[in-house]
Amino acid sequence: MTLRHQLDDIDLRILEIISKNARIPFKDVAADVGVSRAAVHQRVNRMIELDVIVGSGYHIDPKKIDYKTCTYIGIFLEKGSLYSTVAEQLKTIPEIVECHYTTGQYAIFAKVYAKDNEHLKDILSDKIQKIGGIASTETFISLDETFKREVPIF
Amino acid sequence: MNDLHIEPLPNIDDLDEKILKLITKNARIPFLEVARECGVSGAAIHQRVQRLLNLGVVSGSEFLVNPQKLGYFTCAYMGIYLEKAKYHKTVVEELVKIPEIVECHYTTGSYAIFIKVQTKTNKHLKKLIDEDLQEIEGIARTETFISLEMEFKRQVPIK
Image (cartoon, rainbow over all chains, first blue to last red; front, side, top):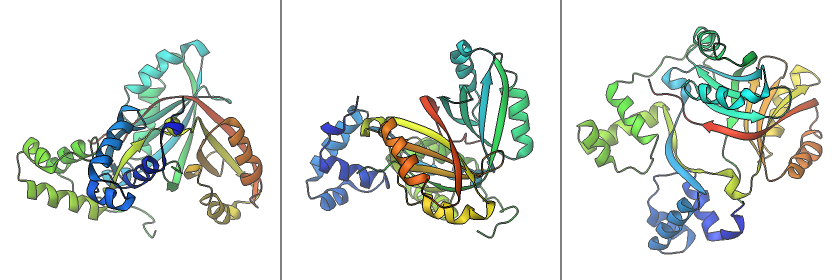
């Protein structure tokens, strides 16, 4: 259920600031938004409780830690009913960073980071295609991530 | 970018990796706590994090927003076919103006461009396809995969 109606403009402004810089001192956020620092704390905690905020983290550039190949993989299943067992297995492969249950020709759509094409081949043939229930896969290598950003808050 | 081939990888030692593991899971963790876990001084952590930022290994920090709680219920992947490959650049310039597109890739395979879209509803998605995407000159057609459920999303493994 959407909580949008439970969030006011101040919440959204706080969210906009801290979703771009998680280490900003709350007193700066407070000054920017025009409320007290305690209010910022309170509102952030409330948004955490409401699950609007699901965590925080520093953003890693995968290329800089040697993950040079970014790939999307469409997965065909032998039977639709195998979805949940296959999804569980996929989760154990750490190079898969995102996994979706999709409409369209693929049953599952996953995003994979590999060190290079050889590593990608290993992940595909030794890990993904060994999973029982997967009929075949289709691979789209991303040659360039043109941009990546968060959803618009306002 | 002029890194046509291989960009030299920054030197990242075990301490960097330990720091990365901690700060990628919690951006507001006090650096003193990181220092304690790693067995070095707080100043050393500050220095290391600054270095990782300068090297571009980490590109900043953020609170992670749950799109659904902000009313974005439809997540879709879309493959875009171009009329001619040379339109790539101008099409991308137009795509970046559409805020609902949160990711954009230049891919091999059947599509020229691959994007991720977050919209409030399916109707909103239809409007985006109809009024924004199909209006862009150079786009021949699109193929849409709606994500019915996101199983998981995480960062790349550190080591």
